[in-house]
Amino acid sequence: MDKSNLIMKHECYNIIGICMEVHRILGRGLREVVYKDAMEYEFKTKKIPFVREKEFCVEYKEIILKHNFYADFVVYDNLILEIKACEFIHDEFIPITLNYISIAKSPLGLIINFGSPSLEYKRVINSDHL
Image (cartoon, rainbow, N blue to C red; front, side):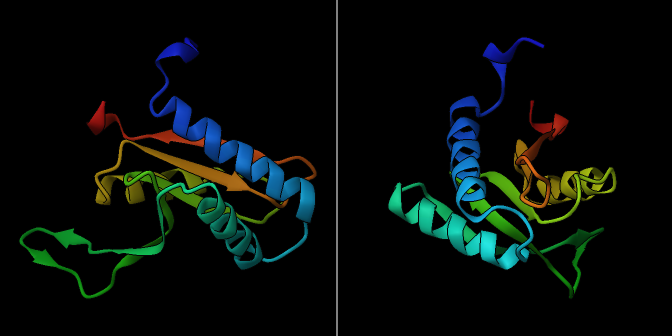
């Protein structure tokens, strides 16, 4: 894979670096909300633009459904960041994140897992925005 053409390469590098720092300090075994609190602190400290628990409406045909979804974070205005604290990044997280980035009209999502011995992450690309 040619990494020179990665979508939002610099932004992902910053986010993953922050996640590694959080994982190094807090370790694994905490609830997701604790990692989200630490991520929010780091984003504020580093002046990285973000919105936590951003609400998105879901369109179906010509209506807006009454139930919405909330992205854990939207970072740099259009990168969806999903925080997990589980044994490993499960395959079912990928289609869920694809749906989120499609609804948000975002080019990229990052799934970050703080629950494993080493930080895990997965890039999920919205092919509609390539």
